[in-house]
Amino acid sequence: MQRLSFLLKVRADRVEEYRARHAAVWPEMLSALKDSGWNNYSLFLREDGLLVGYVEVEDFRAAQDAMAATEVNARWQAEMSEFFESLDGRRPDEAMTPIPEVFSLEDQLRSIA
Image (tube, rainbow, N blue to C red; front, side, top):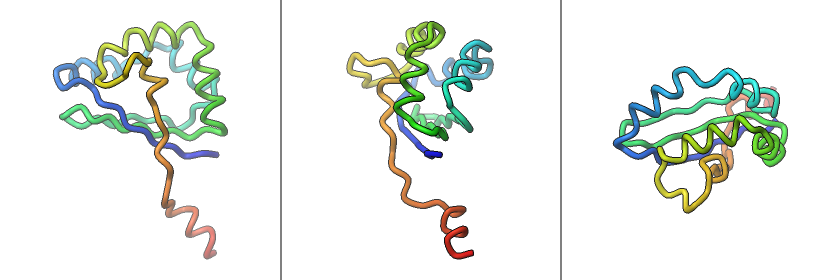
């Protein structure tokens, strides 16, 4: 299982609305994420708009591709695009660049056990 993190930047003037939209994500979007292999998916949002995402997947590219093939994802990304800075014409899900993991407490504890 891959554990991945990524950063995006929410527009400072849209932070509260972004939070509100994520308080009740569409049920069909939640199902599509789960069905596409997204596990333990969380978003963390600072007041200045820095968004940190975390997800566990078997294969990040395959999970992204599976979501990209869904109609609900196309609708969700179209609505969410207006919230972000610096997408350079991409959808938010296309701008998610994984940050490599450099430390895992559990992995290291298992290695010495």
